[in-house]
Image (cartoon, rainbow, N blue to C red; front, side):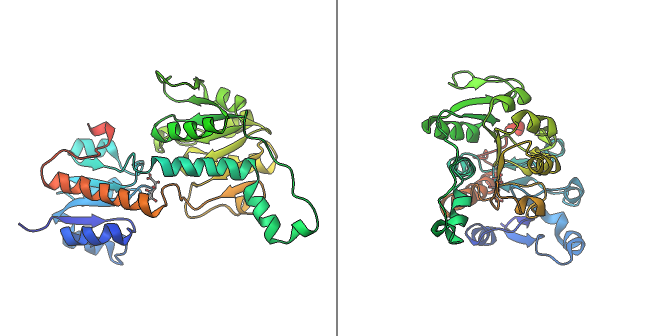
Length: 316
Ligand code: 8YV
């Protein structure tokens, strides 16, 4: 039997790409200099597509792949996949949940510590030789403060557990209150922001959550409040966030994701009360390998005619 044709639309690490090339006829759309030529020559044969968590797959690309059966996302977030279109065409979509939950939650806690306790700033202070001239600034005690979590899914819960262990009180918002959860449910995001010292964005990206954190929510978070985002840049209105930081409307920000990654607004890069990370939530060797294995397992199961180990919930 000939190996199925797979199109790859994102840069992939060797521990995923090498086994993919060994098992399938791979077409590197991401690297291809003549993308229309690649689609014209091979598009009709392509049965699988591999993309990154952050990458967007437009429907006009999928229209050029009439034999496509499966999209396997190398990431938990599939906001770049047109799910309704896939449902209509019977295209299955797999992703990589669970294996990255702890790492992403660790990054959220890291951003709370780096902003609240000023660790990034303190590191710059020592490197600049300032300590020999004066003592370091006092920062903010975290125990007893409130963390408001937007989206108490798998990652949100892992963040809550960690911050609760640091003696922070936890509140959350989402579509509905979750049974059996020991944290305070606040139905309204603005109300959650008002009572939060840290507002932590942990919900899925996509059209439904675009700019959910807007100027009004940031105003409610106020001078006492720090915004942390480990989810998707699209969820925060970045221009409104820059204004809120410039005017002192909010205290600080810790961001792992941005609206136009890898572009980060110059205004944010020059602010001392902002901690910026280059989307490293799942970026450990162990976790990326586990994500790669699950991405491969989803494809293998599909071509073996078996249920996917991690089909997205909307298509179950
Ligand atoms: C990326 C992520 O997928 O899982 C997600 O949704 O955002 C990340 O883990 C990763 O950069 C690989 O594409």
